[in-house]
Length: 151
Image (tube, rainbow, N blue to C red):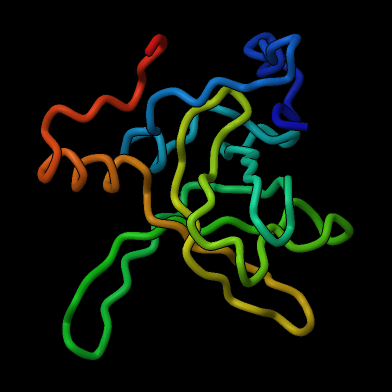
């Protein structure tokens, strides 16, 4: 499911114990130009999250960083994730905020914070890019480590 294009499936190394190790965050460059392809050969990431409300769900992220500005001129950088398909159900619901959005090979994409409903479903989910969250945390906690293997 995470690699719809057969040429990407060589990257699939899902652990036999079913515990995917989360590793580095996708860079702004990889968010702008995903290094995975859909079944039509277009760049995208199939992403997952495990939310408090909806549990484990999958969605589609395809090269769209949204830059929003509120009425006070405060800008934010966000990523948009769409439902996996029309029959898969919502990628997120109320109560899933704070969930990590990740790729099938364990790279961090974003931290989920909101959604935009379309009819009776949540059509788009928004998240703060993980690279930006880590950058902000390192300002306050310069010795924080996000890719530790052993404790």
